[in-house]
Length: 99
Image (cartoon, rainbow, N blue to C red; front, top):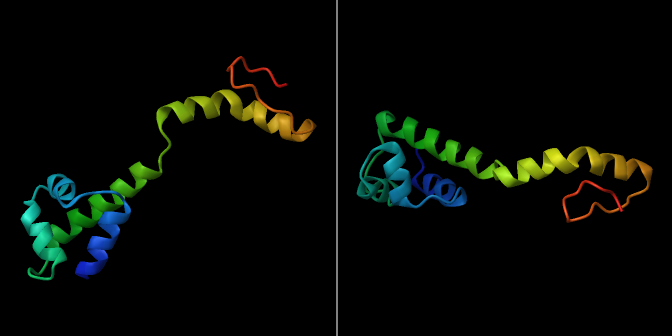
């Protein structure tokens, strides 16, 4: 997709600045700025890595932080059992006990 507005919208939606995207794609941020402003046509040599980095940033953003993964692993099975046996609360103390 070569639409400058779409590039800007997607870049912003994944939380990248023009400078961050430029760094990831290994181009100057002024090139990203000119592409988004419609002042420069985007070539395939830039377009493909640009979208790759935007999609990579989106995947990174959707991945839960490591602490949430650890908590999920610790409490996931307990939470499921809790739901099945009546919805008891899992303690925030992290001892694994259902109360």
